[in-house]
Length: 100
Image 1 (cartoon, rainbow, N blue to C red):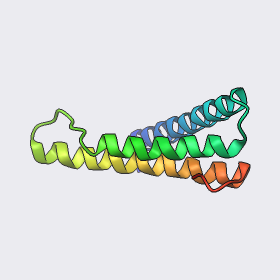
Image 2: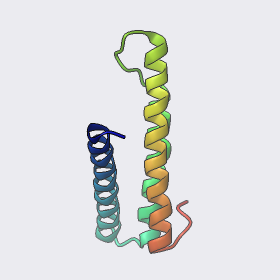
Image 3: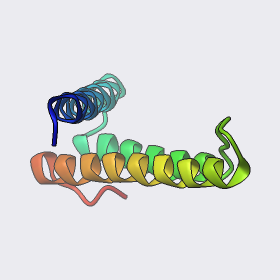
Image 4: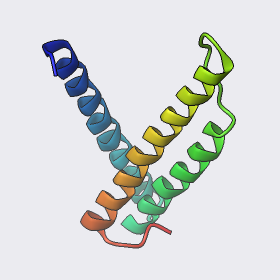
């Protein structure tokens, strides 16, 4: 892996980390504000993961052609699913609950 690829990979990892941290904090703050326990914060992120995956099923991206657009959409959908499901797992491990 050359220096540019390493830098790009580090930036992606940093963005994923910051996104997870932000979503975690927002969900917990909303649960606290509404006098709910942490399991409702986990359930909120799990619902976001489901809703986002459904929305991305029909997403298209402007590219050189339909096949590349479909491939890109599938890759984005898989990455978003992975990040949000990882977050649910991390929240379950830290806060408890089953996320449903």
